[in-house]
Image 1: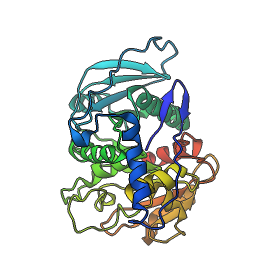
Image 2: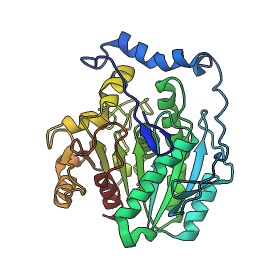
Image 3: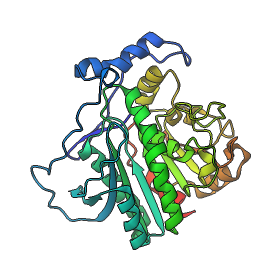
Image 4: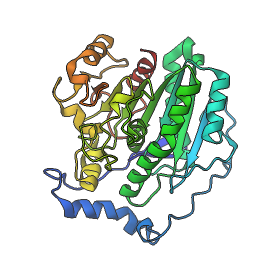
Length: 360
């Protein structure tokens, strides 16, 4: 799931329909909801042929003329999960994006030598412009939270073709890009750069981040310092042990390859409540985590106000409940008080959590 941005306004898609009583039930409504975008979009379903041509990314009709507050390196992937690698520069909402290959991005980060690198991934139904708008909002927010320390941070955006008419197609593409493209990028960063790397993924971008960490290779070598999942469009049991290597939607080794995974959840996320549960026949990690009592399955802390309670985060991080079955640590942040919907994640609490995960 994700957001479509026009200018500076984000429009959150609203889904209708009953929530299934349990995973595997309500299949007829789920199938209809999952197919609805394809029926509305007309011909071109990838299940019947090759994905449609990638949307063009022309220069905006009115070039951005405002001040540039920050720079972000960016890599793009298409509907077949292939790297695009086109060298170009785009400016949007105060951020200059420098596109190129993943290798070139790592080279640039090695040259700049930041102390912490935030790797950002957007969610479903984002075109090139809205993907940049999402990244720019996060970058500005994290930099504002960092204050005088902002210059020690580097940013790398993963912009991927998530405009598939069927949600399932984008879910699969997110996993393929995470496993086959972003995981090698993380390994390259770890080998060449002495910096803390933090993945930040919204909705299906959270699924992409989990796939990148899990990798499906059975290894437990750390790949990142931390990860922050924002309303993750992944199954509630995605991090639980699974005997099927590489099973779709399962990432049991993700926590073991990351110092801490912090999952921002909100019970006011109606998109995950209805659309995800109906389409995927499972409650969503990015919503149901907030319903877990403290210490039940995963550690949970309240997320209120403009900053995360540092003592509560430290206590949850050290608790047995935070330790996943495969190793590593996972903490839910119940942000119901400040996150009003699926795409309402650009709030001070989220920026504070991202910075804290990168700095701890």
